[in-house]
Amino acid sequence: MIKKGMMMPMLLPRPTATPSKIEGELSRIGTMCRSRKKRADASLGIGDDNTFARKVFFSEIHIVENKHAKLKYINMKKFLTIILLFVLLAPAMAQKDTITVISFNIRYNNPGDGDNIWDNRKASCVKMAQMEKPDFLCVQEAYFVQLDYLHRSLSGYDYIGVGRDDGKQGGEHMAILYNKDRYEVVEHGDFWLSETPDICSRGWDAACHRIVTWGYFRDKKTGKHVYCFNTHLDHVGETARRESIKLITLRLKALVKDKKAPVFLTGDFNSDISNEIFKPLKKVMKQARKDAPVTDSKGTFNGWGNAPNNVVIDHIFYKNATPVLFQTLNSDKYGRWLISDHYPVKALFVQ
Image (tube, rainbow, N blue to C red):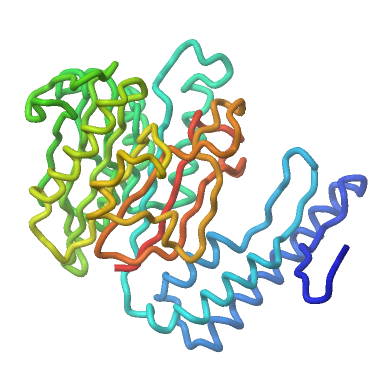
């Protein structure tokens, strides 16, 4: 039953129409969205150099395809939510810098993954980064061959990080790829999640070596600084996950010497945010998914399409910044629906 005042999605024709008619309707709505954006820019006096509102607009106002129902539509409620955010925040943020952070477990190069092997999805992983344009792309489970491919394919990025199994190129990397045209590395390092964090080691009841890669970056244009930390907690050891969070919290306090700089911590934590292991971390860091005015509650682990859509184990924590957008990137616009057994998660901040 439709009640007065309820918002209804704008539905496009079902695919019983010809493909040309459907594409024509999509084109018409795309033109409408761009027209509304231009009018909003004009009314707010926003120039082409204001990327904040534009990033929010284009991140959220888009055509969505329902893969299973074969139905294309625009969610007008979300449209109006973004317009409201646009109107309220854009003038105040016109002179602010934006920072885009993506955390992405890319799934290690496993030859047993069938159709989901790395060679079949690596181009889509690159396309995701090219389309989303993160300032920091924080990957987990990357073997060196995967990291090297991303590095060679993404010409505007460099990276920091070492292999967890030998401190060189052995095993998985929790690397941070950064926009080298915007940022330069001031300082960086790695530590292991163990009782002996400064040497290559396995901690507590963990099944694997676990590591944190971190960097302190300088914006070449503004001179502002940013810290970024990236990790992957153990999937087996409960004690290891709990003690790892304690260690990360201590290291954050010790390594972050610029107390005003934004700090980001990303990773696959193999734990829901409600887990008590996060208590120490929540005292010093906040949750982007929770605090962003535009956000979602979608699952981040998909298990190649076999997991329920409520397994949220990939997180982005922050301090000294303002999150304005959080997205779980579970779209097929990158060339294939599942580019990993985890969806990338993206957060947009203003500094």
